[in-house]
Amino acid sequence: MKGVYYLLIYVRRNFQLKIGSLGSVSFKKGFYVYAGSGKGEGNSGELLNRVIRHLRVHKRNHWHIDYLLSSKYAELKGVCIIEDEVLTECELVKKIFFSGVPVPGFGSTDCKNNCPSHLIRLI
Image (tube, rainbow, N blue to C red; front, side, top):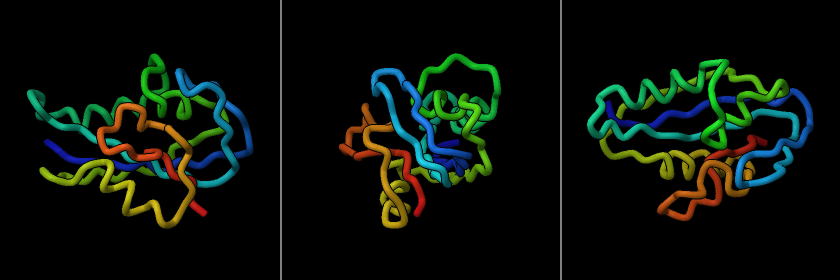
């Protein structure tokens, strides 16, 4: 299954968090949307497995989102999976970009489309 997903995350209070190579990142209280993808290349369950990994409580912090989701101040409130052969996480971010503020560099350090972020704070 190829496609994209987004996670709705609620941050309970303002806080700072060290996130891998990004360093210290400030989060304001409120709702955030994170866009991700699963290409499905060679593994038909990659998209679903990626989302299930995000739901796990105990995991090694690998991606930027792992750091945020492991914080006691962040709570995953919802998940939406979109099966699509063409839609990318970058296109999904552009669709929600207008309603929020990007967290610079979050989840997009390896983005080929130079997205400023794949995590948007909703306003």
